[in-house]
Length: 119
Image 1 (tube, rainbow, N blue to C red):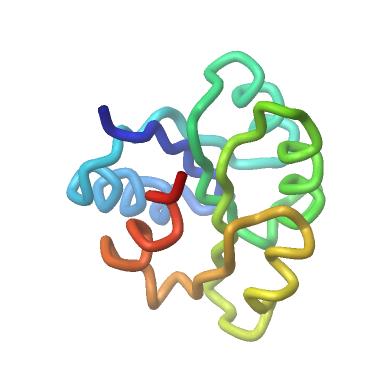
Image 2 (tube, rainbow, N blue to C red; image 1 turned 180 degrees about the horizontal axis):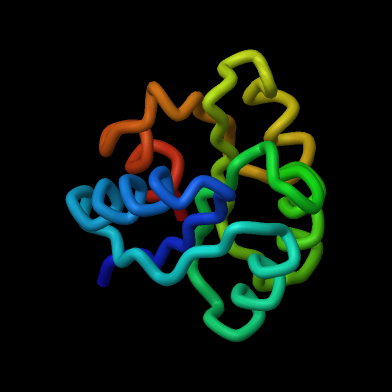
């Protein structure tokens, strides 16, 4: 069974590209959100296995969202992304509760599998 992954980004074009990439990598694209508020609401109703979250969102940042989502016992896997490769580091992302940080230009099936396909 493939992992369900929600895309959280304020750029609609990136959300569409990410959904296509996820499907091509064997994941189930399970919804999308353009803000922290939408992501929190949708995550509680959809319960995706993982989220691909932009660092910069219009109503907060991806780090705060990761902290909210990973605070519970049944927390989803989260990978932070950004168009700005200097906006975060893997260490920053892991400290917030994410599996890691990936610049959007480096997103690939290999990177997603490396981060998301862990038990």
